[in-house]
Image 1 (tube, rainbow over the protein chains, first blue to last red):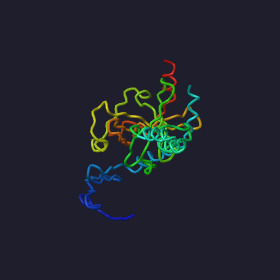
Image 2 (image 1 turned 90 degrees about the horizontal axis):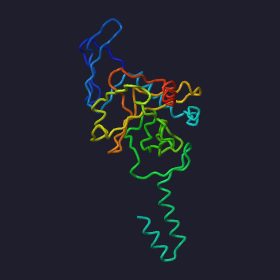
Image 3 (image 1 turned 45 degrees about the vertical axis):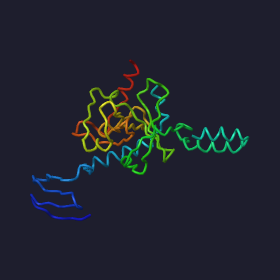
Image 4 (image 1 turned 120 degrees about the horizontal axis):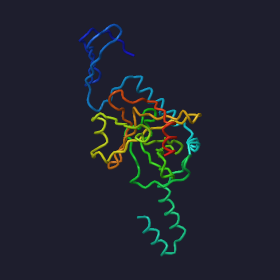
Length: 70
Length: 177
């Protein structure tokens, strides 16, 4: 992982067309602004991970169990 | 197409060869699945997930299998690349009254052109050992453009819906109706 230190209003450019800017810092919270092409999805890491985990759990679900609903 | 061959070859009394060709063509359209046995896959029934879904990026082709029970809120997303992989889906509108997800335009555009009635929204179901804990992902449902046959798992805008939404009670209620 690349570690950089930025101050408020400073930016990072990723690749050709993704910019991450520090919009503000309040206590332990950092407000980020992200400029990226529309087709690039941006998610909070924990959200993406949660979805991935749920999908994996879903793939392991035993479909026969649904019969106990009937 | 292969029907013609079959008949032509039969006429030539080349019965064995005709059967072999016919079976080969028909076999291409069949899938032997772990959960549903052998199923037929008509070409126009395949659903394409360009980037798969999170955790399953290499599975891009699926077919929907409906429940024999027509009153069931469930159907299944059967992977074509992996016959052992199938996701249970539920109609989210039947388990969450007033479900009204908003999808980012940029994500919807990837599914091609369509008007509202061309889209089907279904959410993935997780069935734990204790059936009472059955839940579905309302935050990121599967959106299918029925016209273009393109689909994706799209994260809804806003923080309105949970990734884990428990549906046992509502399913029991629906059954009682």
